[in-house]
Image 1: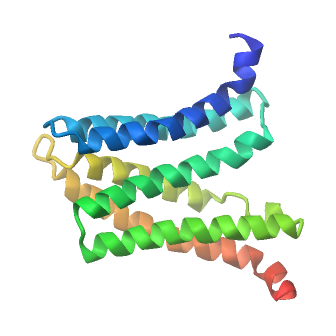
Image 2 (image 1 turned 90 degrees about the vertical axis):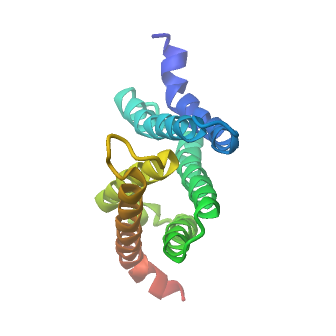
Length: 190
């Protein structure tokens, strides 16, 4: 593979993930019976690019400031957009709570990371293992919820809801871990 492409591949994948958001929305709202399958497929493809952009950046040692900035932004926009669309499609109290918890945590941790970076303590709030597990549950939950229809008598939507509630619980847990790690520095600056 061309060195320039290899060097830029993680950023290309991240930008692709952002570009797929309107495609997912378009498919979701198309008036065809296959719209949910198409939206789910686009979402899963975007989710896979999230894994591979990090993999290629580590493998080829091609970390960039642009990639470090855009990757978490792309993740948050993709997840938030999908959750808001799903909430609009099924406006239940539990879906609203799960969406608010997940989106609220993303905003809180982004702000915390920004503040910690200003204090020179950015590494205090690096991605923890629980954050990766939370992301995995979120991606499968959202994919199942986008798909919605039963598959081989499996209640796909109900499985998606269960995974979403687990993701919301993991979201709160991971937020607690991040805040606990940052608390000593936060306490000094309050």
